[in-house]
Image 1 (spheres, rainbow, N blue to C red):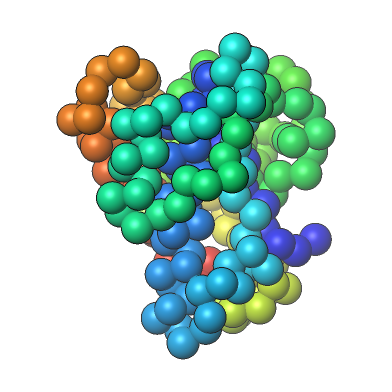
Image 2 (cartoon, helix red, strand yellow):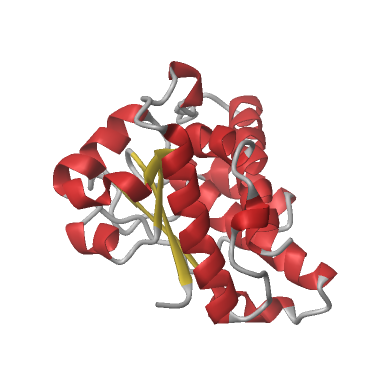
Length: 203
């Protein structure tokens, strides 16, 4: 039940998935502002969180260049601490977005029943482009409306994928240790998905 819960997964949970976690929150906050709704209500409508397939960085803050990307785009980084993915994180998620197909397989190995709501980030972005949002439940800036619309959107994306595997181009490069330019490109690719997702939830 509400709020609509999105789980972002990468390898160490200090670069890609934290950026996706916080940039999705930012995108929804911006949509709320356009609706004339207090952006502080974002937590009522959306729970965006993240975890890593490995636990090497558990308890650490976001990698500094990842944090710089989030902050430079208007997002927040406080309160973040890396953690290892657990089965209960997957169970509680309405949508799981992984950085790569390998991580998608990891999630599905932990929880096979989550396959229909687990996507590579770039794959989900592609599918959003073909989903007929006119067939989704009515939009509204309430927890119930966002939840119902989000769950229906995930189901429609899964139907649109029609069993086809993700493409190699759907993967997000791992920017760890590669400098600000690479982090900026990866953050741009994340925004290319989270902005349409926010628009679909709150058109």
